[in-house]
Length: 225
Image (cartoon, rainbow, N blue to C red; front, side, top):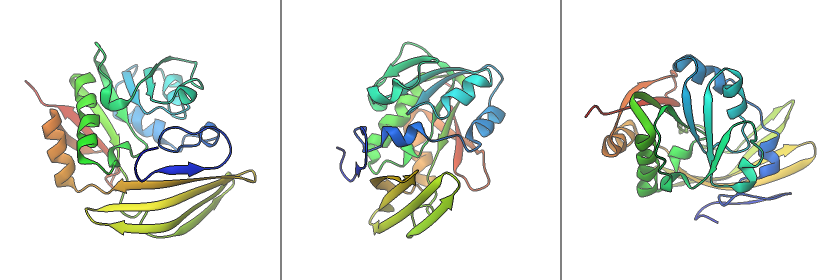
């Protein structure tokens, strides 16, 4: 289990504490529409951290070619519709380039500068010249305080929030669906634009634009050589 992360609840879990059964029940909330609008039709996409295919399937349905990557064998076993690769993102080095490298689910907010740089270097290694790296980042408001949210799909509670030095925050997130509950302890880092832009540059990328007004979605591009 990684430092600062862990989980509890029914079923198998990934190394970071993610509950596989819970992720199997998750659905897209418009992310595929946002991604599709930001890229060319029929793009080749390297999806880093695909999980059980929550976004993979909608992107395939929209006509894109997706290679789905996850470190969890149990997760990618749920994604039989396309090519899958079991690998840790920071260590992945394929002999291929893609129109789009996609890394969402706040993976960029890992609370370790060196690990974040490795993730960005993986993105830079696999994006073709002129292509796009699309990143979803956590906003400071998302884990700022305890909160309970109810929907027709279930209940989500954020509790035990700790604000730590270096813009880091720890919190416990509990999802309850159909009377079953899964909890996960998270340790994340909120990123300033200066920090993100600096690490993108170090990885051989540049911050191109924000795809959403709240800055949660970022497009980076490879630096021309």
